[in-house]
Length: 61
Image 1: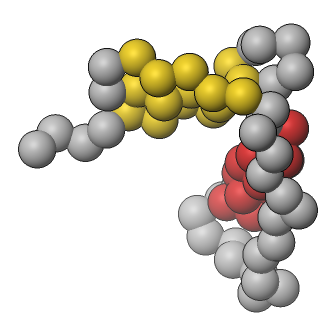
Image 2: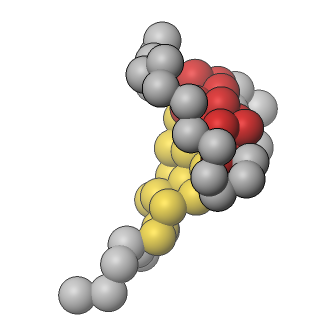
């Protein structure tokens, strides 16, 4: 699996504090993802070593 390259707008958001850094960390993690695991209602994106990068949980129905 390969995601990327990712992109974002050049619009700067200063609220809440740290939101731009959070966005950059999220996009960097997406670009490092090479695999995934699904368990029940959880999707986990993993790197080349199989280590988790991002975890998503389905919202209640």
